[in-house]
Length: 551
Image 1 (tube, rainbow, N blue to C red):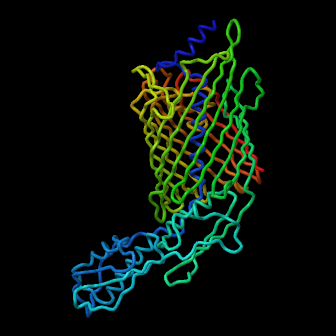
Image 2 (image 1 turned 60 degrees about the horizontal axis):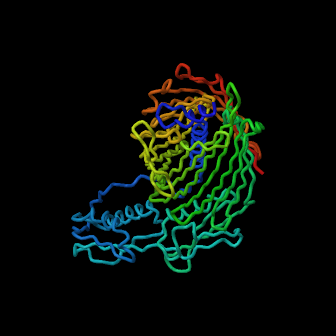
Image 3 (image 1 turned 180 degrees about the horizontal axis):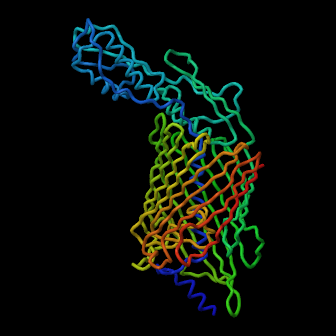
């Protein structure tokens, strides 16, 4: 019997193979991580100090006397080579008849364009000149940063690795917004900034005020997101320290386990570490986690213990490449290394051993449309032979570790009204596409609280490609922070693996209550499957909860 079980669990490479417990745990962990990253992106505090305004494209000029035909318009001044786009706007008026009112109008339009691009202290002045020569000269006077300093009553803080600008640089509001964001990313502080006149003409000093609160915290959480096989209740303790090295950095360490005291019969435990540090326009992050599980498989003769270990390490870089008054775009890059081991009665199942490395490169975009917020992330993920990744021995029937995969994650949040009742609407889309055949751990899985809600997660549908859509309306209740919410979700999977599934489509609904009071946050919900394949087993209704307590 032991040999039969061993063969059954080692023969997993074909696309018809059922997911192993390790596969299911890995897929659930990845879905949980994606949901946590999405929530973290949504909750990050953005700094936009200037309201978005539409660029004035009007180039008309008043008819006036006297006026002169201007055949050459010239922008002069310090660092004028950095403002070639201003010269381009100025050239639009070449060959036009221009008088004093027209010159003032041109200067106003150029000044507004500078302000819209963040150069709020840069000026354009009109020198004395003879327009009868056919030449109009304007002088650009760049506003510069005098000093960057902390206010007298400010808490100690390091601004040098947060601000992508220095004293003496031309002042741009976009750079100041980025610096404030990098300092405000520390949850235990409030940061404010003021511009005051500098010592020299054309200079402005940046004065930063920091209010620092307790930088460390301990968070306990409990939920029922696990499976019956390895423990339904999951407990976690997270210790976080802000500004660990005084560099606006973040550090946390987490330990988790099942809370059902399954002992030798079943259980889970794990730990993870996270560190993140900014440097000007770039944020570097490192995370590493280890997860272990075991479960007992009953047979006609004797029970056997199946266990496994999943390790993951990720280096991530996020670099700002563009921002304006209401949006910003980041270049995202990551290297992810995975290690999977499976055991039967303490004997490793060698065929299930995985050592993989993937490289991910993409763009993230956030835009504000009045009170609405749109987040979009598009990335390409490629399996690579780096850092000890195993050789790829794929066949047309088995998975490959050298896959190429496209990923997309989108979230839209906006306020809505139902008569006099105000609520909020949230739409989430996640998609995955590849032409390759994948191992289970890399497939898209749907049918749990992080993907298509309304299902208990004991069974899922997986495929090489697919997508899911979450719709949610949240209604604020009487107490601050308390919300009732209704969700309708839909998901579908495709690919070679899905040929042997019971079906490819799931749809579900959820009703819940979430909120917080003092140091406690909660989320209770009930879900129902609305569409599932015949033979796909799940509870109906399903129940779930999440509780967190922070000290």
